[in-house]
Length: 85
Image (cartoon, rainbow, N blue to C red; front, side):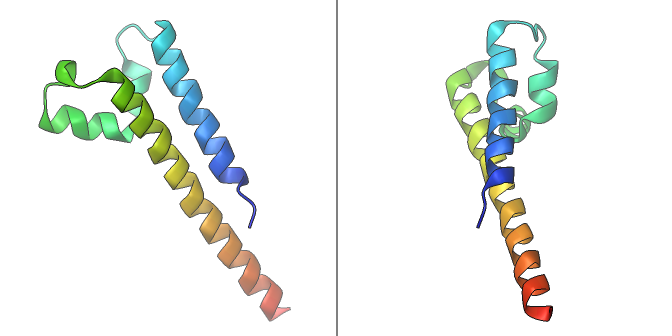
């Protein structure tokens, strides 16, 4: 199985975190739009009390997991197409 979507999703998450870390996202708008763990953290606790590094790590892990699930679906579709031909 190829892991291209996993790698691309992980790189996107790293870019989101790097963009937020550099300060070019002053109100954290991009980060909070694209970080699923930040959504849940904001719902349940005060976001100012959560570790930023923890949110970055969870964001990268979440995006990698989503990419992995997409890769599983792609591999399953390829197997179905290969066996039907």
